[in-house]
Amino acid sequence: MKVKELIEQLKKYNNLDDEIIVAYWSYDDVTDSYDDFNKSHWHELVSRFDDHDFQQACDDIHDVINEIREVNDDS
Image (cartoon, rainbow, N blue to C red; front, side):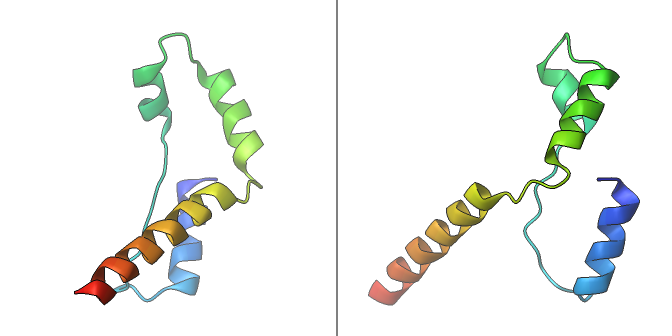
């Protein structure tokens, strides 16, 4: 996804003062960790994740939400 596409989605579905959870990887983030990773690899990676549903990340967030609720309910 291009940055401008993300910004448009954020503006469309959120108020500018909303707090949100965001996770993103940039090309520099990846190349700092993998010396042999190039732009061709990057474009393939982006392509593979364009329609990814990130369900595991959603499940992880729901697990943490439930943990927080349990801890706060016990207080």
